[in-house]
Length: 451
Image (cartoon, rainbow, N blue to C red):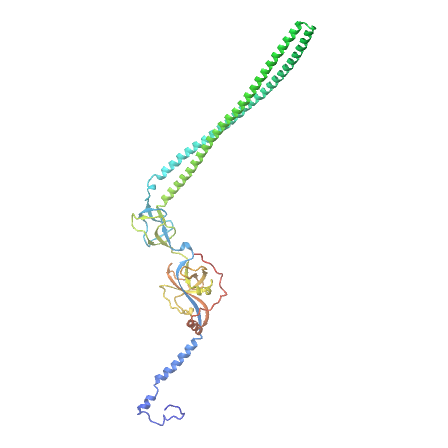
């Protein structure tokens, strides 16, 4: 019954009418199920030794490598009021097309003839400046004339001083000669007087000597007075020389001061003209900024300011433009634990949101709806979310990325790592271990992404 003995009695006993014997018999499907379970177990064990590609999953968005190809907002350069729209959402625009027209809201620019009046002010200031320039030139000529007159006058006085010095020298010689003559006459008179006292000379001779002595003394006094007059005249001429030099110095200093004042006014006027020219240019550019133009060709995605008469502030966005033709890329963020396994040049698989896909992460070649990519850059600075940014570009050797995807579309990226056995991957997952660390041989150098 228990089939322990090799001698069975099933063939010797009729068990068709025995219910207990019937219950002991195994059903055919039970035997078949057991065989299938054994087969499935063997298949499962065999699958444990199949190759499995380790991978890292990351979430990101479609972006562009070129900054000018990313979606951009169109901003107003000035404060203004919306007067007219020339586009609507969904319109295609080319670079330089007019998007809207603004009007002025600042009272400083309300004058419709602002440019003409500013130009008139600039022209008037130029004439004033020209007058200051002419005045400075006239004073320069006056300075030259004063310098010439001064030199001539000083030369004349110096010549006069030279002449007076000669005259003073001659008068001095006459005075000295008369002084010597007077001394001789005095000596002769004294001798004559002595002889007269002894009776050796007559009174007539004595009187003659007295007369000659008086004449010599008179000449001495006359020549002395003449010498003193020449000396006084020399002092007067020298004083006139100093006075003339001082007067001309004062005149030249005053003229130089007037010239510097004129030049200062001229340069101040030049500064005013420069400022006014700057204002004129700003006014001209401001008039051009009343029309907001498309910075590049693309699609008007959204209009943030609507209606007529609504005010727009400076640097405020009025709409956004999407570029039709751009170089697609994917920006994903990986955890710090996975960063050592990410290398530029490695292959990845990307799956776009809204794009049908069947994914077998361990067997990338059997997946459907995923596209190839290549890691081109790995950020070295952690983001505010505590993850690292990784840039992925399309793999030129794989299926091209679909044209229907747009910037901002969500992306799931699968970075392909080492090939291991299925049982090893299950064991790693159960223990929470990271994927195996390795450095591929065919990767490029690392590139830092500037934020």
